[in-house]
Every structure is written in structure tokens, then in C-alpha cells.
Length: 289
Image (cartoon, rainbow, N blue to C red; front, side):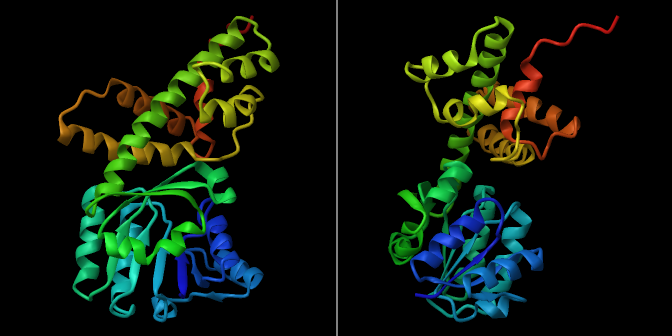
């Protein structure tokens, strides 16, 4: 099996390395050519200059930022991939974008799996991502060796778009947990509690969660290297907001998170980790003088 991967950011680059470790990776591509060239040189694979460089691939995985990037890449790949190939999209986009991408490829007898992931940069580096997949079960089985290279769990959620629908649910939970953890730790700071004792105590009980475990100590040290950028969370939550409105459910937690991440972006903190949210929860400093 020959596999290509497009999008070599914080998630895509370690995923490419896992594919290379399984002997599957053939070609890598990235909007910034220098990044693709550097990784290709490191892994001794091809660096794509155009969609034509993916023509011999059985599977192409996408890990890009926005809906327009997905559709742009899918349109180009539809012209060069052979019938029977499959595109796997690990980006977080709308359900409608997933369905549109699938339809574009289907006219060329090319498969499509919408397969957003959860688990953060740590999950990508450790090959322990959770993949929520939508699409044809046979095509999902076909790309199984690819997903197994970097996933701890692959779940078939239903037809095309179901993966993105599941990611919307995931992001509501993530956003709510982030809100609660940042608010709680800001309270702990204000009360003068010792972080070295507080964090393991919280993790040992019902309050324990991934975000507290992975980001609790760093946010209390004001270290906000992503991770997952606040701007990317804001983009995801705007997608989720549209999904929730269409579904007709009440989302006060989502609305608060949207407002908070928009404020972080307005303050120039969009490139900071989502744990920078704690800076909005802390009590204001007393006025000077």
C-alpha cells in the first residue's frame, strides 16, 4: 500500500512518521513547501510539488486546517488518483463539507472517509489517537492499516458526515471541560492552594480528566505552547455552533466557550494553547497605585 499525507502541522507530521514506521508512507505534501521538503528528506520519501505526485497512492490522508483547504485538495486529487483509491480526511470541518468532498470523489470512483481525530498532539506523537469515521464500511476496512499506524481506536460512526458529527459532540465536551478546569484552577490560585498538592488530589477523584492531567501544571506556570491552538478551537466551535443550531439543542456551555476563545483571539492569543483560557478566569490585578 502506498500512502500520501497532506498537511504537516503539529498533528500531521507525527502521523506521517508513524506511517513511515509501518513502511506505508510514499509522499508528503504541505502548503509551505520547505516543511514538506524537510520531512521528506528526513524520512527518505517524495515531497509533493503538485497533486500529480500523489497519482500512484492507494490512500491519501488529509490533515489541514479549514474547509476550503479540504475541498481544494479533494478537487485536485480527484483528477489524478486512480479508481479505487481512498481519501481519508482527518481535518475538522462541517458535515456538509465532508459530504461535498465525498460526492466530488465518487464521480471518479474514488472513496472518501471523513475521519476527524481526538487526542491532541500527544495522541498523534504516541500513535494513540481516537478516530471517528464516517463513510462506507468497506472503504474504512480498506484504509485500516493506515489508521492503525496512529490510532488507539477507530470507530465507524455511520455514513459520510458521521465522523464530523461525532467530532462536533467531542468539541462541545472538550470546550466545557476546558472551561471548568480553567475556572477551577483559577479559583485554586485565588485561594492560595499549593499546585503540587492540588493537581494530583483532583486527578485522583471525580474531577480527573485529560485536560487537567496534560495542561494543569503548565497553565499554572503560564506556559501556553500548543498543543491545540486557541484559534483552532474557535474555528471548530463555530462549526459546532452551526451544527447545534440545526439540531435545535440548547448550548450555553458552547456559547460561553465561543465568547471566551473569541476574546483570546482578540487579545492576540490565538496561537496560544487552549489552556490560555485560564488567563480570562483569573481575578483582575489590582489597579496600579
